[in-house]
Length: 451
Image: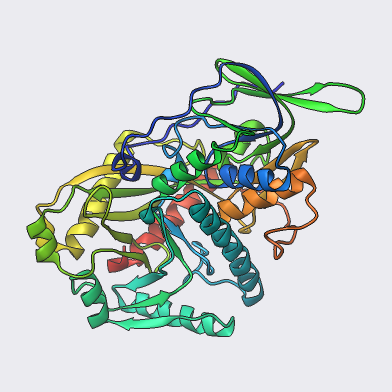
């Protein structure tokens, strides 16, 4: 039997969830239930896995256990970019080798298509998912060079893009901060908490899918039902699920279940969101009412202007920290929020009186060799983890893949996926901690005004 599994806390209040209308969560698990499949985790990977399982085996009983409320965890804390193209955070300009990037792009697009079909099927609110592309924004000569290099890479792999000059960037944003940009058409922009909660609520309309929120798994162990069959038993605070097959869609938390030990890097990134802009502030800012920027420098700031449910707001996302214990303090979030304020004031000097309303952190999980942590890790237990900083698209993809592996599906919605090597072993913990944090801090400093 495993030691008791402890759930990591989610630091700060995610603005994405806070600005949504109040949602009634599904009840917590209470008592004993049996299922054909148990999915642990109701983020992008877990909900994609449950939906794919229901497509493959419509009569299968599927239980989903979520440790907190849907949208409260990492899935509702990201920046909302469902990116189709190469997006390697450890690179100079997001690009890797042409062959690998072509394959990853096709995988990401399979995930986006799956998400779009869910968006349509469950009649999600319009702002939950908008297929409008995104811009890599450059505020420095280095950022412009990154965009130029990336554009050349996109040409080599046959992808469309459009370079924007400083005037076009100012027309979009209302500010003269940016020197240029690179727009690509294939990214879907999400209100992540809206999308993930709408997906969860849509899935539970299926009578064979049962979601239990605030139901953290505390133990997962094997029960021999017979000489030929194995059942898995998952315990929560108030209940038990028995299932023949389990999909762990918990990203870096899978280490606490006993798998992929010392192979996963646990990184936090952070974001802040303003209060609602007044009518006069919106007029003063100008520009377009919604836009979404990632930084041309991978360690720079992602900025979004948001309108719709929750009002007109601006979100800033920057800073990365390596935290192998998968938890950070509220004090850390407050400290990083000061950096967000600096980034905001540098870009939107006319809005210095606009207060920050929400600041939060969210967990990422990466591998040294940029691969998933997937496959059957023990008889009947399948992993859908390690999304390498692109949880919306890669999380969706690995959820689909895990469902197909668990059900032995003959046809795949992600046909371009090929079995990968294991995540590489990490260096000893002290070296990893000092090396990873030192490297990220240096890269953030090098980003200059793009941060």
